[in-house]
Amino acid sequence: MLAYIDALGGPVVAVLLLLSVAASSIILFRILGMWLQRPRGIQADALLTEAVSGLAHTEISAGQRVPLTTTESSAPRIRSILSTWNVLQQGLDPEQTRSEVYRLVRNQIQQMASGLRALEVIATVAPLLGLFGTVLGMIDAFRAMEAAGAQVDPAVLSGGIWQALLTTAVGLGVAIPVSLIHALFERQHENQSLQLLSDADELLNRVSHKEQAVSAHNLKAVSR
Image 1 (cartoon, rainbow, N blue to C red):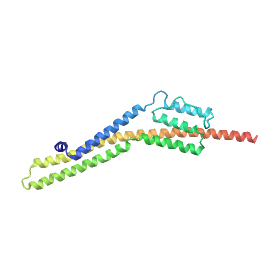
Image 2: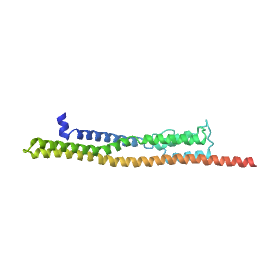
Image 3: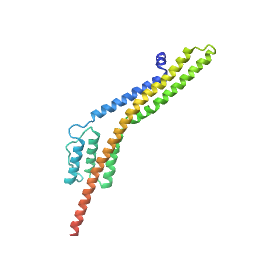
Image 4: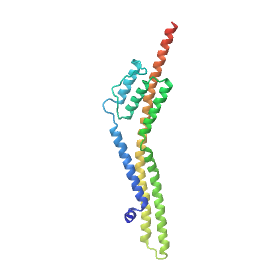
C-alpha cells in the first residue's frame, strides 16, 4: 500500500486525490439537488403573482387560511413564497411578521449554500498542499544528493524533482476546476438569495400598503 502511494507521488498526492473525490461528490450532490428542486407545475413568478393578488383582494386575519394553488414544493423560491404566505396569515403584528419572514428567508438561503464553503476550502488548500509536497520532494532530492556525495546519480535527482513537481501539478489540477465551479455555484446562490429577499420584500410591502390604505379609510370614516 505504501509503495502504491509512493508511486502516485507520495502521501501529499494521495491527500489531493481524496480532496478531488470529495469535491466531485459535493459538485454532483449540488447538481442533483438543483435538478430535483427544479420547479414542477406552477412557476415561482405565477405563484408570487397569485400571492400578491390574494393580498390585494382578500382580508387576511389570524386563523383564516387562504390557500394558494401550490401548497408544497422542493423548489427553494416556491418554498420561500409559501412560508412567507403562511406567516402573513398568522395575524402577527407588523414587526413580528417582518422578523419572522426574514428569519425563514435567511434559513432558506443558508440551506441553499450547502457545500459551498467546503468547495472554497478545497480550492484554497489544494495548491498549498501541492506546494508543500514540492518542498518535501525537493528536500528529499537534496538529501539524496548529500548522501551520495561525489557519486551523484542524475537519475535519483531527476526522479526526486519529478515527484516534487508532480504534487504542485496535481494541486493546481484540483484547485483550478474546483475554483471555477465554486464561482459559478456562488454566483447562482447570490442570484437566488437576492430573488428570495425580493419576493419577501414585495409581499411585505403589499401588506404594509394594504394596512395603510385600511387605516386611511377608517380614519376618513371616523372623521365623517
